[in-house]
Image: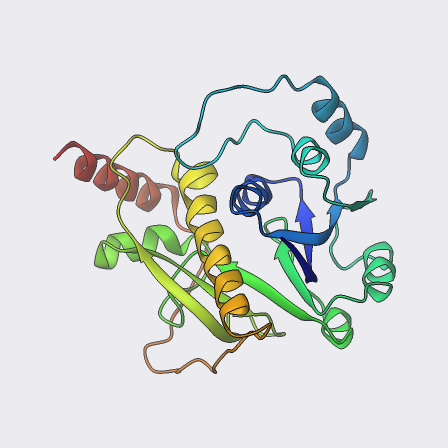
Length: 242
């Protein structure tokens, strides 16, 4: 199935790989991808030299190059050699799109600037935390330390960080296996919530419904201190061994 109203903004990251592999597995494909990176040649070389494995991954395979996945699934894409989501190059490409919904899978540290919200597009972002209680950065660790929960929330981005209208959210089990949280499990749970958004869109006859966040209990976090992160990882490991 081709989702004619959806385009993915695809950085060269584990999150993009999780999103694409999940959508391909479910046969719910974006109409197009905008692949952006500071080194497109490297991405092409990785795809050309990749040898496909027959092993199945429980979550997704972080080793599969993005361009390999796109070519194999015959998903059209545009390449932009610029890592900055706010660049004129990317803005120009987005202005030429007819699709309404942009699935945002960007690089860490970039905040979308106001001009991107004036393009008459709905930008879907999956935040690795339950909103509004866990806004900000590395919230997967804060939520585990404080409540022993892991979750992700789909929102329509606006100009305020993690304050967009909520589409859906979901809690997840603490992983029972020794999986890398940053590069595998966190992207995986985000991809599962993205698939939930798509299912709801199809269920609701091609609509995405959202609601404003309730500010009660809202909290914003900043990049977790390495000591606290280590403590969280130890607790996750201890939970796995029980």
